[in-house]
Image 1 (cartoon, rainbow, N blue to C red):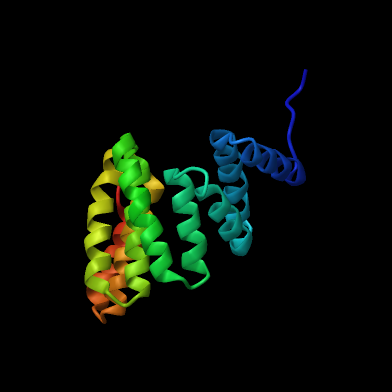
Image 2 (tube, rainbow, N blue to C red):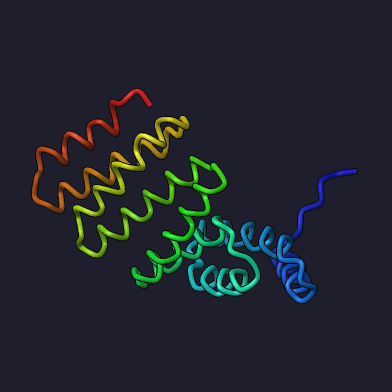
Length: 172
């Protein structure tokens, strides 16, 4: 027997039925699967709608994080920040250090978007050692790059270049 792959319409139907039946775990799992796929292809409004429906059923850190990504991209930075703050708390409570690091990095990006570069640096400097600790090489590179972007925004080209080079040359 081969692997069965559900298409998008089938997954949406599973989500609908799970939500109607009060099966929040199934609805959340399906929502997280769909929203991850949709984020990859820039379907941010669809992610925003689906995660909002899912969060009425269950407050999952992954769902909150994906909802935050959609809101951030759609320009609702304050809304994204609220979702990310809740998400990082849930990741911390569950012991998911990689989730904590990724979400701290997302919070840093929101603060950078809001023009609060010091807050952005604070969050990035919290995310970096956690990404290193869990061996998330892509997370380390992303965070170093983001720190470089903040310094570039501050007009400190030397610091920006140092962090950009660290992204390339670090042993991650």
